[in-house]
Structure formats: structure tokens, C-alpha cells
Length: 306
Image (tube, rainbow, N blue to C red):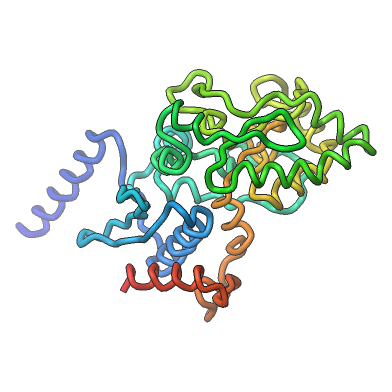
């Protein structure tokens, strides 16, 4: 009886400590499923940022970190249960990669809190694109076919140039496409997201806003009008951006239809791991192991989880 009372006391004390700290521990999930998804997330990141991520390590306490070439370690999972707003405000890598971006065409609004890619791990972005306005500006490049500047790091500007090379000829022969592209609303702008202390992706030179329509943003219009805009938005524009590793704000519940953001890790995860692995398949099934670099990434991940 005494042991039972002691156990109850310890459980209550633990709960009180969690409540006092203002957060809860993430609920435990199936360990094999959790590890498989974690490996896929990390592989997607390594493939997305090959010049910036060098390794992955698992500490003695079980915490997993992505290691940047600078030596900086970025935590995969902080083990905290968060609200949707909490994930947006202070995400770890797991939060950022949680929602799988839909690569298929859509004609309706996404669910309210389904915003794949809207969670951004700022330590990662700062490592890749610059941790100050000056450093970001130093990396900017003029993008051919436009008057835009975009980050030259991690093939961002190169990818936007490929988009425009394909889109602009289409726009000349299709007024609907042209009206959605011109006049462009901007790329680099070192600013914070309105009402927050979080930098906009425009501050890193990795986002472009095309021609503005008053139905484009969830704060400007009703859900009904936003859905009409999504249904009529040229699918060709979205497909060309996605092919070049951009996500579209039209596929967010908090829709931002004129917004495209260079996020290769989100597109790569969707491309290779959009469906759950079938029983018996390897966690990296579908990824080419003929590629020596990818094979090395897989080996590093496997080593970290031995």
C-alpha cells in the first residue's frame, strides 16, 4: 500500500511540474513509426541542404541533432506538446516537417490548421541564407527574366530562374497566367511577419509574391472568396513552382495564394515520403541509392540510430 501511494504521489508531482512549466511532453507514439519518420525527415533535410548539413547525431540522452557544417547543432524534437500557434511560434524540426505538402492539384481550401512549410526553423534558415540583413544581402542575385533579387545560396535564385524561364513564355500566350504573375509584388524584403517577432521568408530572399488579388490572403477576404480564387488559379503556375522546390501558400489553411516559397525539404519529403511505407519496405524506399551522395546520407543516418 505504501509503495502504491508513493507511485501516485510521484505521478501527481510530475503532472504538476509539467503544468507549472507551461508545456507538456509530446505524447509517445509507436517507436518504430516515430523513428522511421524521423529518418525520412532528416534525409529530406540532408538532400535539400547538401552544402550546409554535414551529419546527424544521437546524444546519450536520446536527443537527435542535425549537425551543420559550421558545427552548429539543431535539435530534431524538443519533446514538447504544442498548440498550432506554439508550433508556428517555436517549432523544432519535427514540427516543421510534420504536415506532408500535397503535390496534387487542389480546388478547395485546406483544413484550417494545415499549413505545410509555414513552420520555419530559424536557426536552419540563418545557417543557410544568412543571420543578418547584411549577410542575406551579400548573397542576393539578380534573377534572369525578372527584375527580382533572390538568395544565391542553396540554388534558390537558380531555381526561381528555372521557374521564370518556363512561366514567362506561357504568360505571353495566356492572359489568365499573365494576370496572376504581373505585376509581381516582390521578393527580398528584410522584414518581420506582421504582428510577430518572426522574420518573414522574404527576409532571407527565398520567397516571391506574384500579382496581388484581394482574395489572395486569409486576412483580406472570406474563406468562400479565397476558395473561389484557389479554384480559378492557373494550375500550371503552381506545378512549375513545385517542380523547382517551391511550396505554394494556396495549399495552406491560412491561405496566401500569391506567395511561393523556396523550401526544398518540404517538397522532397512530399515527393519521396508522401505515402506511408508498406510493411516490409525500407524506410528510405523510393530514394535512389545509386546516387553516391544520397547513399552516404543514408549510411550516416543509420549509424546515428544504431
